[in-house]
Image (cartoon, rainbow over all chains, first blue to last red; front, side):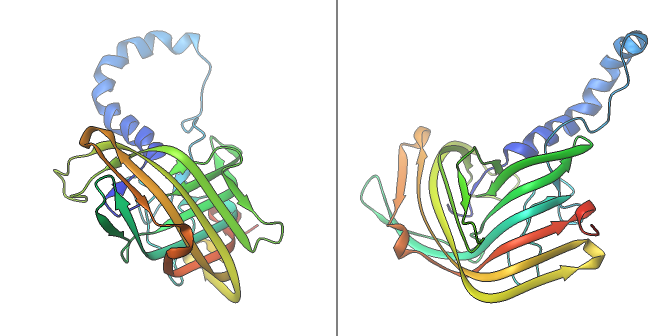
Length: 130
Length: 117
């Protein structure tokens, strides 16, 4: 709603994996070596989470501005329908009856619906940036 | 960014309008974001957003970044409700028709591996 309210369910999963990888490695090596002979090879990107736009957000938060000549999608390897908007302005009321405005130049929303590539195959889905 | 459940997003058949509606989406309230020590408090958000094409062509393409958008400029309006239970705070916007934004687009995009296909 306001720029101060953010959501990032998908990137959190990736961030957690990235952050925890270095910590888990020393503990995981003995078990992993032992298990190598028992498991078939798996892909490095086995998840179905969409890719972030690579040159915009290396941290994977999928966040980028909306505007003229800027890419509308928040995810990469995507084709489908998109809608973007920014610079909202409006009013509202809190639970104590105070009138509070919302919106700024960076209050933006977006939606993507279609096909994307993840887990080394095509996926279908819809995502929104709020 | 969050996944939209089935039925949460509806594009019109001609692609000129889109409605997104979700209820009780888990978000965080971070009044001091993007400060590194910004406190994040669990919150919930319900919202409805409607885009409507105004017919004015819009086409963005950047071969170096492998993206192509083809669509139109649009109007966009929203209504929303936010609750931060731990703070005892809630807020509800005025009706959708009272909001406005200066920039909106709607259309089709291909990027990444789909850009050249």
